[in-house]
Amino acid sequence: LPKPQGLSAASVRYCHCVRHKAIKKAVALGYMRFNVTDETELPKKSQIDRQAMNQDQVKQFLLVAKKNRMYAAFLLALATGLRRGELLALSWDDVDLEKRTLRVRRSLLECHKEGVFFDDVKSKSSRRNVSFPPDVAAELKRHKARQAAEELKARGKAKEHSEKFKIEVDPATYY
Image (cartoon, rainbow, N blue to C red):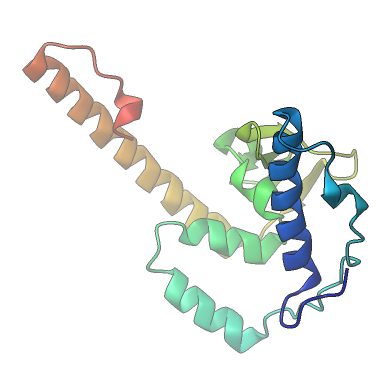
């Protein structure tokens, strides 16, 4: 299959995947006899040359990110190099703020059929301890305190609504 002008190999592969699934369903329903996309030759996956941010770009990013609720996560990602799924799967049980270390045990995965879920990391080498600098530990402590305050506020709101409407309200729905 010749690569259409202007589309990356990844875009072509994605379009093929969508068409393949649609035609597979048509075959299953008896509208078609076979899936013509099975005969398609796909372009090879191309490696993207990624550039790391330089020091000025990191400073600019952090300046803007500081206004975001997820600033601690952004800072931790920059300081440790954790993958996105590893970062999003962290819980406070994985973090030791005094020793300034964290344990990578799980990853957040996305599966089109099952949605989003946590799973163990794929390999033994992915399961690891990672250290982080004192300024990151200080920011994580502030973030943990903010979370605790938000949770306390949510519990109060849930209790208030439970009493007002005479129903049981789960605080998690407010937090």
